[in-house]
Image (cartoon, rainbow over all chains, first blue to last red; front, side, top):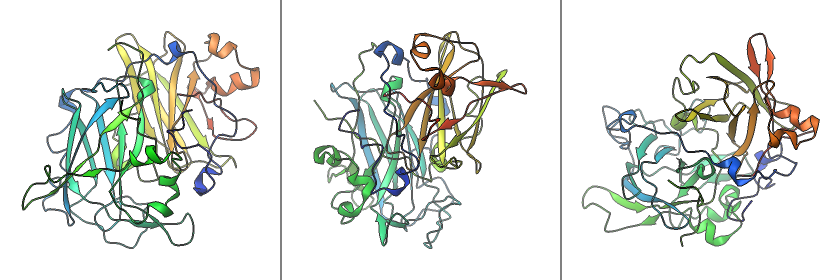
Length: 221
Length: 150
């Protein structure tokens, strides 16, 4: 496993203790990993799936943001027609999920889930609100920095990626074992979106850019 | 050359973004039902895992996804595969990167399976039980499932 990814066993993140495999991962011959990603038709993505602010009768509370970026491979190639799925807490730091007991209000106008397909330039775009930070039980006074979960399919099985996107300048970075589980500082930086004034729309929404880079695959398109 | 984006855990709340009805049918109404549980190192069910099956099909990849329930259970409908197995990805709170393994259909074998010790081979082979195929994923312990680097 490359140093880019966090180790499976990371004691500061308590939940790894009983879940990280203790035996080493076995290596398969490369040919055994040659499996294309499933194909998604455009028709399976709804028109409002990438606008999390318009999925309910009213608008959600919070700081409206435009979030865009490209899905690339390590060699710089764009990944077209790739499915990007996101989910997040609302502006108060609460997920619309029955397991989340954080005593922050639910927002009836926010589910916090979106989907998009990348275009010919590998670009995706979402409109949403900036999620709030929230407490969790990992250690005393533990808070997750604001983040949006991303799930991505590249062209091939070996490119599958689930990650989290953070916001620049978050004071909680130093205290968050999930963010810090990525040991390489440069790799950690790549989990942070960039604020972009050019993308920001006057009187409407702040703009953030977040490119996602998938493992290169030796297989032809 | 841009650097690769690191993996992060799927966390406990993924179902709002990842789970949709019918996604666990790789083949709609498929004749092969695979059922199983995800278990942690204490043998306890993992109620917040999401399992994906990626299987080689005649016309491309067959794919399915299922979040585990309170007892750690998942279930898929599919058909048998010419290459004898389906790839399995496991995501969960507490997994900083997803795990990859394989479920082999009963009686199937290949060089990957043959290279393993019999006890490891057993962790990858589904068992026929009352008309369904049972396949449990053990994240840790003496009977830990064999996982592959991806």
